[in-house]
Length: 241
Image 1 (cartoon, helix red, strand yellow):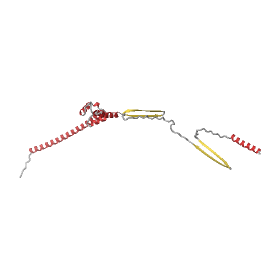
Image 2 (tube, helix red, strand yellow):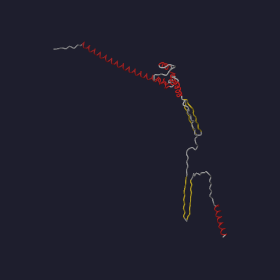
Image 3 (cartoon, helix red, strand yellow):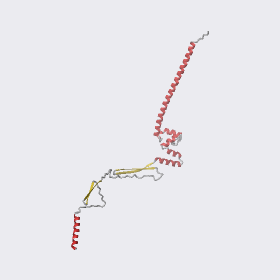
Image 4 (cartoon, helix red, strand yellow):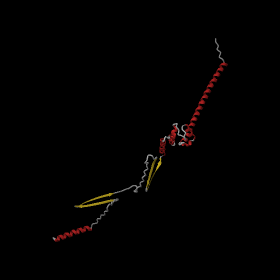
């Protein structure tokens, strides 16, 4: 019995040693590592059972294509500009530009002159300085032209109405709409010349028609005179039986 136990022990020990000695399998595992298959992979399995042979072959091919740049573009954020008070006549402008590796941003406040003009005119009007308020608004070209078209010209150094019109016409270079005013004068002058030419042509046509009419009437008078003269010189004598 003891001899049988010793023989079994030796057989198990030799079997374990043989398996460890002939083992050619190795495995490497790193935490967090991934392995990407970039080529072809082929595995073959052969099973021999009871004299039968089964062969299974599988092929796996993985292709990976990436287009575009892998370098991210830096972002540039435009700063925020705002008017925190309603009494501030300004507006904020900002912008940004981002390229590969460089990003630039900036901004500033810009005065709103039209807003300032309206607020100052309102303050003058509240102080009962109505002419001063109107004069301040008349610094705007649109207001100045509107006042002229309405027949209520903007004040000129204390003068209003017709006297203001005379001064504005005399010192027209001081008008806020001077360039528009000069362009308008040139256009009106051209139109006046065209209308004058049309009037001259119509007058010449009228005179020509009148002359033709007079000539026709003169010819008729001459014909009548000739007929009368012919009758006098050659009277018709009627002879009765």
